[in-house]
Image 1 (cartoon, rainbow, N blue to C red):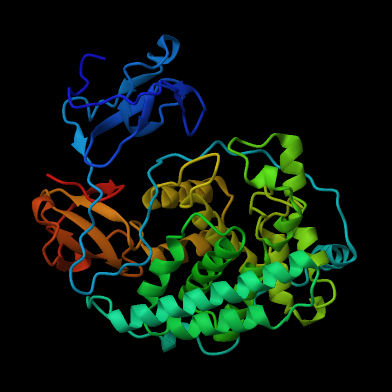
Image 2 (image 1 turned 90 degrees about the vertical axis):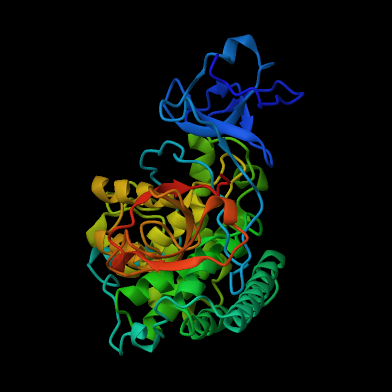
Length: 450
């Protein structure tokens, strides 16, 4: 380990950090403010960690990491200060640092059945309830084209206000269901519709808030972010407003059944055992039970989304291991949104992924057959390959933040850029689709100082 920087200061504690992928104990810890960190690779699985080596870690785990080959000679200083030029948004800042998700789990068969699920299962087996109902004018036609303009502070303030109100209403609904009190079955539709109204003012800003969730308030906050992203993806598929509202309602409801799952399971700071996970996969049925008295007022598309969001096109999902031809089109979109939001969120058992890494995970999932190709392509149109709000490095030495997408030009978004030693300055806005001479070096977990 002779290549370590002399600036590294070990923590007083010597407790190793489990690898986020294979859980091997590693002699590293997270980088603190203004500290010099570097990339270390787990010797078992190769996962890369931006960390500080702990000199006083247990001897038996000191050899469990090696310096990353491209980072062996040049540690990278990390800074917490954030640029706040005029018009710079204060919402939706990514926090992910991990580059690989935890290993996947094989198909889980759930034998639980309810009257509602039986009705849906029988209809699906007949090939019913599976097609989209979008017949009106595409909602995307209502959206404003902002080009390379920065976000408007007034629009941002209204969007944040609407988000806070939607979250308050959804949390009230969840509390009522927990306590067994009567609920307003029309509340989710009102939340979804009002969110769409705000999205028309600036879809990129709406998406930025939706794809960078805080890590608190599960399941209400998670479900709201999934609904926002799913509706945005559906808009890029050309769906009409009513279909997007029904998609949003299903996303808002899809994890309500988690209220019946013991806290010790979804708050666990470890990977669940198969037996424990078998309890979690029951939550779609619990959702229908919680809404049993009002379920007739929930649109069919919303019910299908709530039931099938966790299904996968290759049959590896739950609760019924359905394959692509037996999964509703809206549920395929919800699945992509749900996985993306989950991956970029911190969880007790793993850190959040960098937004770019979450996109990579979904692209791999498409190749393996787990996710719908059209839904993931629409996700790229919605957030770009380097997602809105995330950071990147340019090959000329500048650093940037993604501000807007360029739809089908996934890898060439509209970005704000700074020189690393001038982060306090007003950024230059560059449309990469019109600047072929500018090349992206790669994603960053945050802005870097020179």
